[in-house]
Length: 486
Ligand code: ADP
Ligand code: GLC
Image (cartoon, rainbow, N blue to C red; front, side):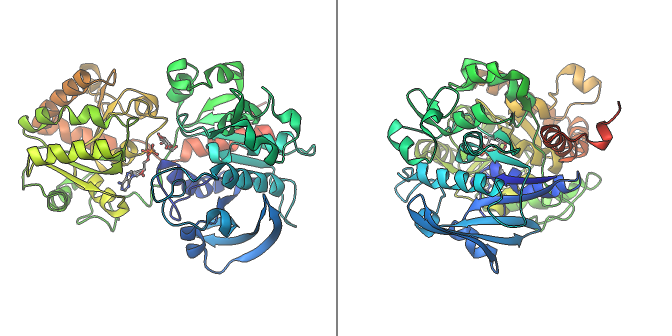
């Protein structure tokens, strides 16, 4: 099966969040399921720099009013097709916002161009290459299913994966005439959304299949509280909406071989984590301590519930804990964490900015990974935590609900607990969860058992990659060997 994946982020070329990890891991995971996957992404400076020697496979004289070309190359075992259009993508820093922190005003055009090019590739733009399925990720690729639906009739199929309902790419009607779509695409069955244009809405409406990144989130987004305006639409097509849980790259995230760690370790040599803990304490300006080290590796935003944690820090410190926060995001939240660090010198530390290496060290040495999200489509940090023997303390939403088994009495007795969950996402519930975690940490035998159990839990792509392959196969009318039982 030949599948074209389309996204705005791909690890290790460009990453602002979990989307990049997922899009970067999928091709290798799917190769084992008979899927050949190429990935189309914009030619941001970081991307073209890493692409190195690449072949030009197409030239555009008029790509939404600018020139551009398609470059094909291989990076880290991935087959990439890069849309090199300097006027649109050759900008420093974050892929979505300018230096002042505002969205680039032409984002509608930057991602319409990406999606349009994907659909053209699907129609055979480049000789010798014709994908059967286009897999579009998030709003930046949301117009792909619309271009396919309103394009020349073809057998091309589309899958739309929603990684986060909170980002939808909505614009006024004024951009519509420039989108290269027929007038009738501006309708409820097309791209129209509350009188304007909705990129994610278009994808969710027009794709053959819609997936999201965990079964719980797939159910949650059918409700007004989580659907963010698209719940009605998702309910209408609920037969073709699926939750497929994310996995992680088991090689890039392996505590036995991770070069970012001070000391590597396995489930049988957890002592190796102590050196990492000491290194974290040094990096975050914390005093040496054997008390429980809580950590956060996250975008600092409302979604992530960082404000809830800020208001429970005193309790955490009074209980003998320390807190290391690695993240960046909303200034108000950064300042709140900084304020807590000043109130509790040596006990609370903040490192701002994006630091991939440090994120690995934190997983490899902290005792608890706190993820108090208000909503979480899947979440990857708790999966990395499980793999690294760092106990996840999470709110019971989305993928956090699907991947962590709460240490309640029954789960402890049955010896299946892998972390601590709390609900609802409120300060009181989080405070209780912190108290429970402190008590669990004090019981060294139970704690170590939980660590080892987490390290053994399956966070790989195995099951989910097979599920995607099965979805592609069903779309193109193939029957997968392993499912052909009739
Ligand atoms: P989201 O995509 O909503 O931000 P995920 O948990 O799915 O949440 O993915 C977040 C990814 O970004 C993880 O790989 C995490 O390790 C990484 N990450 C978040 N903040 C930082 C940071 N400040 N430095 C390094 N990595 C970070
Ligand atoms: C989004 C979600 C996160 C998910 C990631 C990858 O950024 O916020 O929960 O893990 O996409 O699917």
